[in-house]
Image (cartoon, rainbow, N blue to C red; front, side, top):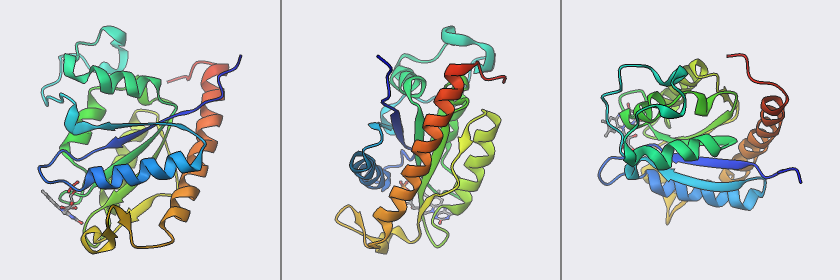
Length: 198
Ligand SMILES: Cc1cc2nc3c(=O)[nH]c(=O)nc-3n(C[C@H](O)[C@H](O)[C@H](O)COP(=O)(O)O)c2cc1C
């Protein structure tokens, strides 16, 4: 029987001591489970071994034998199995955290021809600069970034008890997840119909 379940991987990108990221990640996971269009999994990069020193060869053509650390296996298989991603990112110095860059750079084909949506948070800009940089980077891996995002400026006053105070936020999350589900179905059908030429 055809497998119609789409796997959504939510990636919590910050690993900083005392970070806010898991609060946002849990809320996004709750929105995605309520949405109902996906089987939802969450990976927290703080649980993953993510060295900055890469092997000599880039991962693009290396296949399954790419020498990743044992502590990265859970991330690699979650990326591999996912049909769609939500990246939860803060903003550090007008970009996204080094942990996310490492997670991206250790992989390549796991992202190819799959959709990625963003939920960001930070100071006044709400992580806008981080998302712009991620869109640029992920296009190199042939990922497809989703137009609608969710940004939480000044999250320190905009959230209470694990929820955004903005009552419109669940509606914005639904719009993002609707677009992500559309892309997930469309791109998976494309991947199944023919190998992606890239
Ligand atoms: C090194 C560093 C740089 C930061 N730079 C920015 C920034 O450029 N813009 C911004 O809006 N917030 C900035 N912030 C504030 C973070 O967005 C805020 O601390 C947020 O909580 C970080 O996410 P986290 O708690 O999950 O690590 C910065 C924080 C750190 C630690």
